[in-house]
Amino acid sequence: MKRIIAFFVLAATLAFAGKPPQATLASAYDNDLTSAGKEIVSLAETMPEDKYNFAPSAGEFTGVRTFGQQMRHIAAVNYEVAAALLGEKNPVEMGTNENGPDSLASKDAIVKFLKDSFTYSHKALATITEKNVMGEVQSPFGQGKAARATLATIFAWHSFDHYGQAVVYARMNGVIPPASRR
Image 1 (cartoon, rainbow, N blue to C red):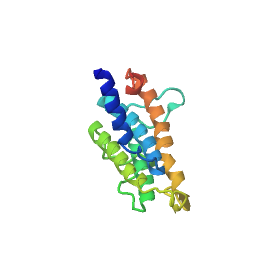
Image 2: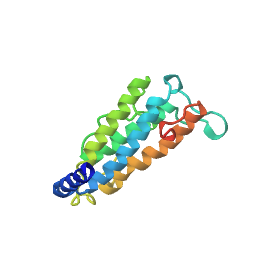
Image 3: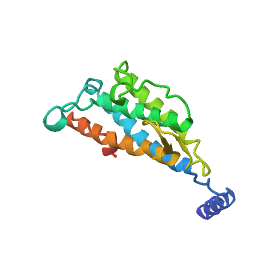
Image 4: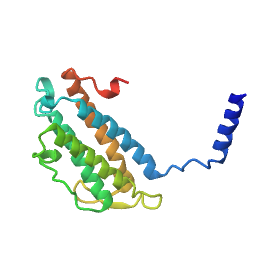
C-alpha cells in the first residue's frame, strides 16, 4: 500500500511540476563545452606535475608541444574564441604558437588558467541566441568575420583534438586518463 501511495505522490508531483526547461542554442553549445572541460580538466589534474614538461621525441614527434603547453594552448584558444564572441579584447597573452603565457609553468597555474578559460567560454556561449547565431563577429584568427555558430563549435572540436594528443602523452607516462577509468 505504501508503494502505491508513493507512486501516486510521485506521479502527481511530476504532473504538476511543469514543463522541463527548453533547450536553447546556447545550452546545446554549452553542453559540449561542459563535456570538453570535464574531460580536459580532469586529465590535467591527474597528470603528475613532473610530467608537464613531457613531450614525445622519438619518430615524428620532434618539436611537438609538451603536456603543459597542450593545456595552455587549449586555454589560450578558448580565451581567443570567447573574446571574439563577446566582442572583447582577448584578456590573455597568446604566447608563442598560441601556447599561452610562458610565465605559467607550474601545474597549479596551468590548471587554473585552463579552468578559468572554460568559465570565460561559458560566459561567451551564454550570449548566443536564435537571432544572433548566424550573425558575424570579427574572426579571432586573422582578418575577416566568422559566424557565431562557427566559433561556438571550436570549443569542443579544438579542445578534444588536443585532449586526444594529451591522452597519448599521459598513457606514455603510465597515467590512465580519468575518462578511461569509468
